[in-house]
Amino acid sequence: MDSKLQVKRIASLALLAALFIPILIGPPPAAAQTPEPLKIGFSYSHGEYKAGIAPLDNLLSANLTRLGYETVWAKGGINSTFLSDLDGLVLTSIYGATSGYLQAERDAIAAWFATGNKFIWVAYDSDYHGGANDGQFINDNMTAILEAVKSHVYGEPTAVQDPISNCAAAYRPVANGTSTNAFVASIVHNVTKVLMHGPTLLYGSNSANPGENVAPVALETVNIPNVYPLLYYGGNATIVDSDTLNPYAHTAGAKGAFVAMTIEINAGSSGNGVIVVSGASPYGDYQPMYSHQYYGVTLDGYYLVLQTIDFGLKYATNPPVDMTLLYVGIGVGAVVVIVIIVALMKKK
Image (cartoon, rainbow, N blue to C red; front, side):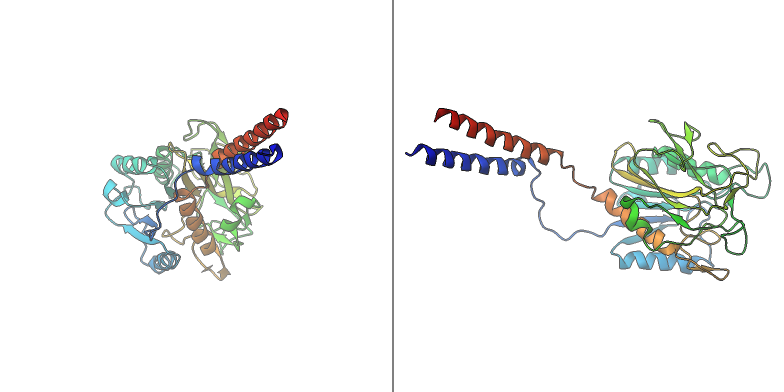
């Protein structure tokens, strides 16, 4: 057989083999089937329900249903049965000093999130509860849940007011800044004014073992891997502390565009969860972030709430494929082709 023809044939076979290597080392194709709708739960078990706000909560639920999700509302506490088939969980700030989460509820949430590919949103409120020594019952409860799922972001034990960007009162600030990071562009699309009723700001726990006041950092100036600020207060936002506990990573009286909301990916002990933290409530409460108008101010926080849940659920349950093996396979295949061709050329 002509040696040149033999070289061409062998080279062609080697090239085909190299091209099929990535397929052979990759995962088998999934069987075609109709997927079940992703399911997200909301808590109504800790004082979150308000009759006057229920229509807004119902609208949120209806719009999530239109997006293809199933929503359920817990009215008798959070337990493993309620969580068993959930892909996501949204917990707005509690209402009432006696409405806190039981240890069993926190343990159930932690165990559920640790199974992996879960989305959770935990919301805070300010430290203003009527008296300087009334305690941090909202902050304490929400922080305990975030510690249980190993979050790197927490709410400051303080309050934020804005004398300029607000809904008829400084304690009802309107957050009007969003991230310019392309990764979260779909979350903040069309978001310009979000009501943060009686809120706090956020800080980061820059540690491999994160927790309350563990290596606290200001997220306005310090980046934590996998943590993305989404929403910022206006430049006139001011920290107004209402009790004897000072902020951890900020200073009472400070003014600026503080971080109001974040998303963390690759989160939790599983390394593939998604955690959202906000300084105010997305649903329920006195008036949620989902509001479209308040005291004559037109708002668009509903975009942020819907787009955050949509992104978070999809990212948690279907994270980007790790292309490392594919690239390695292609590289190995290319090397094989080159080695074979060089070897054959030397025999000529």
